[in-house]
Length: 180
Image 1: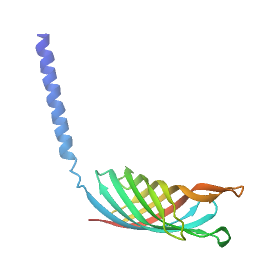
Image 2: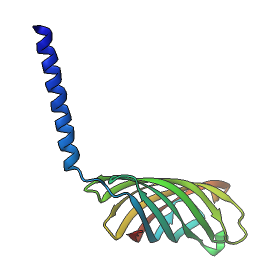
Image 3: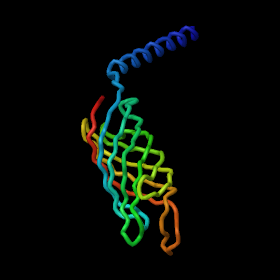
Image 4: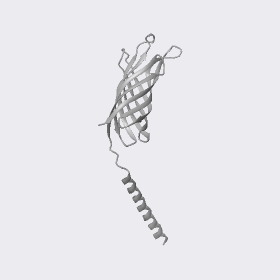
């Protein structure tokens, strides 16, 4: 008798579980995965000497894996200014891949990107590892974000005047994007 009650309870529990999962699946509409393309402008400030202000433009391809997670590929051009007495400006092409995770209201997100920065200005033949965490807000067409980018291999000047290596940039980005 006890075995029959346990068996019946197990069957009822299993049916209830399938009914609950089925109802939940019906309430959640299937997310339409797809690509987005965005064009952005950014401005920022470098964190180490001799670099100063920075401006840039980029193109970002985003693939929405789910409603909350996307992968990104970003490239463009960044120009970091140096005062004339400290040398020549640095221009480079960043190439980054990353993950974007929407954390609140499907509009606020955290992002992390990694890649390389290829110098292209003033005969500076250096490529640097590039790491870029950020936070942002995106609507259907507009994307506003703040990020920190670290370039580990570009030359700098230490506080004591000796040559150093690696610097960062704090930047704001304003972009227009759309579904493909």
